[in-house]
Image (tube, rainbow, N blue to C red; front, side, top):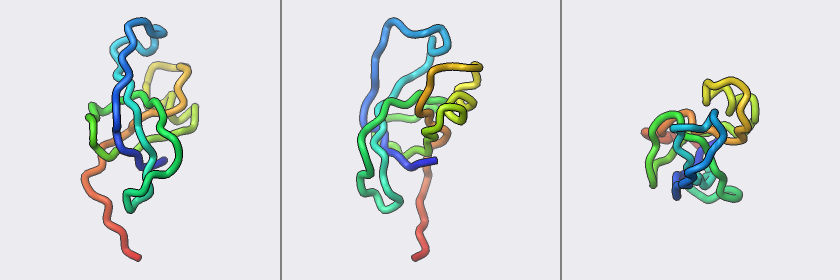
Length: 90
């Protein structure tokens, strides 16, 4: 799992049947301290996240497919939760 910030949305009028009604968001991976970590990704949203929110996402195909809950779908990244707080003890 990774932490990522929702930075945008993808609008697509034609999708595979497994994605009908699903929201696609652009997420920027972050470290727990809020530093950008890597390139932005398109993620399928299963929790109703919005722009600016910090989310928990999975990047593995099988885990991302499970989050979608629609069998085998071509998913690389899925949002699993919205983060309320990150508390680091260093």
